[in-house]
Length: 20
Image (tube, rainbow, N blue to C red; front, side):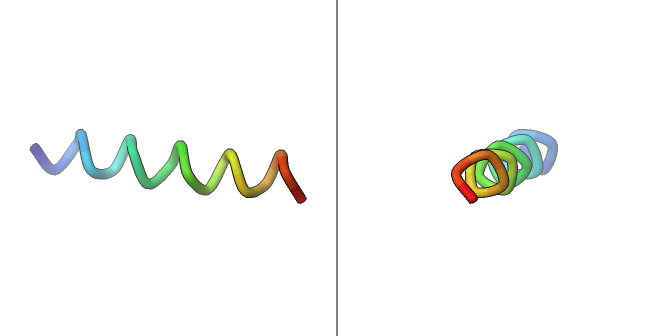
């Protein structure tokens, strides 16, 4: 469960990095 949340968080951060 924790790994799922971590993956989701990493995905959001990556998305923001690519957007910026």
